[in-house]
Amino acid sequence: MSTTATAAPAAGGPAKPAGPPRHDPKVITALKRFAISITVLNILGYTVLGFEQGWLWPFIAVATGYVTELALEWVSAKGEGRPPRYAGGGFKGLVEFLFPAHITSLAVNMLTYVNDRWWVMMFGVIVAVGTKHVLRAPLKGRMRHYMNPSNFGIMIILVLFPWASIAPPYHFTEYLTGTTAPGDWILPAVILTLGTMLNAKLTNRMWLIMGWLVGFALQAIIRGWMFDTSIPAALGMMTGTAFVLFTNYMVTDPGTSPSKKSSQIAFGGGVAAVYGLLMAVNITYGIFFATAIVCGIRGAYLWGLHFQEKQRAGLAKAAALRPAEPLTVVPTPAPAPGPISAPVPVPAAASAPVEAPVKLPAGADTIPVSVVPAPAADACAAGSCDHAACAASRAAAADPCAAGSCQHGKCAAMRSAAAKEKVTVTL
Image (cartoon, rainbow, N blue to C red):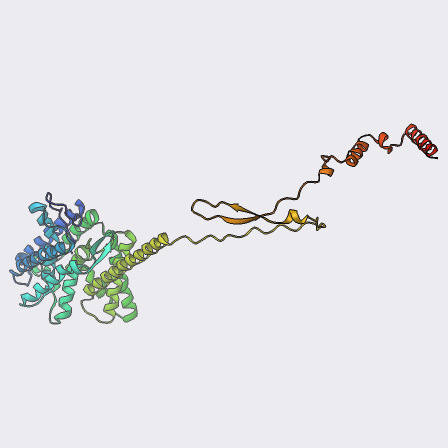
């Protein structure tokens, strides 16, 4: 029955961290209509309907809520180093900031009955308003409260003070029966109509309401089938004014319920399912405990997503900072050996190593390096020598007739005659 309205940071002066952003205009309008509706209901309750709390109690509740909200916001702003959200927007900004505290305070007082112990009611209001500053989880980059404030304050009163109870449902229509018999139907119808318009046009929580109503009907039928519970009696609760108020103004709190369609259905159906389990084990006031349990599960889920995302970001950062692994150099395999040939002898003088100094880059010393010269070329084979025999051989190779190596008949006869003449002269 509440959400957090924020005010713009104060203008001027030194730069300070900005406070949490304001809600969009639709949410501000929804808060204003929530606040007006519950104020009118309280006025009618103490003048026409038959509320049984003291008439001064709503004023005490509202004053307690305002002081608690302003004090905790001042502490939070100091701790976070930002301007308070109630500052900088003028009177209008202050009023918008106090809308949630106003709604929560009147709801806690209206829905609980603690006899004449007004301090218990004040304690419930302080717990409800303080919950928004304590039970928070990261959502869309900022901390948001996830526990329904007024529901949690009522639940704490019921747990810590067993003699306390929920305000009797009949006090909403106590003076509308008898001569004004249709009145006990008119009031729930008016609340249902106004709440449906509010949730359909401003808070966009109709899918949550559908999940809650369908789930509530199913759990009533299942309890009747499994535990022999009266199904008409279990379903009859849906016709009461208290149930209509809870459906349209508490479980649909936009600050503590999801916005996505599927998540809304799961949230509403989850509250109905937990309520059915609590009723099956005979836990009274199960509707308030069920809402608190589902809100707590949602808060744990949001924290789980936050830590998972944080771990993912840490792993990505570590991977980015990790040094690159050194490359492994794979040597090129040696070529396959060719056919083995006979070694060519090299003269000893040619194979002797010759040490020649090799100059290293600047700053380094000179070291000896062994250099093996290539063997000298064969001048005779190359035809560049001055030997007479080599010259004759080259000439014969050039003129086979002069060298006597041709096969001409004429050259052969001349060679034969010359040979005979040589022999004759010799004798």
